[in-house]
Length: 173
Image (cartoon, rainbow, N blue to C red; front, side, top):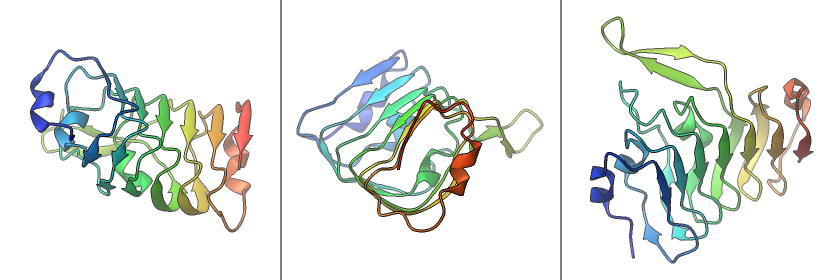
């Protein structure tokens, strides 16, 4: 089956676990924008969405997500999709078809002074697993990361960007 978009109508839902099923198709963008959703786990399905630009357009809705696990699917696209999820502490994208550089800068959308403005924020991301994807270059990772894995990505070039991971307890590249 697929994930119905009207599931996002549940404005009180805080945790959504749909892992290890045979779900196919795309992830409705409305799921990422649920106002109370903190944990989203869709791992171990057959989702084949292309994650390109972030689902947020001049709104802070969805920025409350702190755990996203989309591992073991067939997702493509880039890390740019996740740039406005400024409250993320855990991001697991292992074993998909994501590509491009590993470059993640967290940003926040603010509307307090009128029209929407994008501002950089300090990341609180503690765990990032992007292993077993098609990433080709390591460019920028948040210094807050304590656990980082990019194993089996066929990375080229320098691992110097890992120098910022002062508090890391686990690095696997």
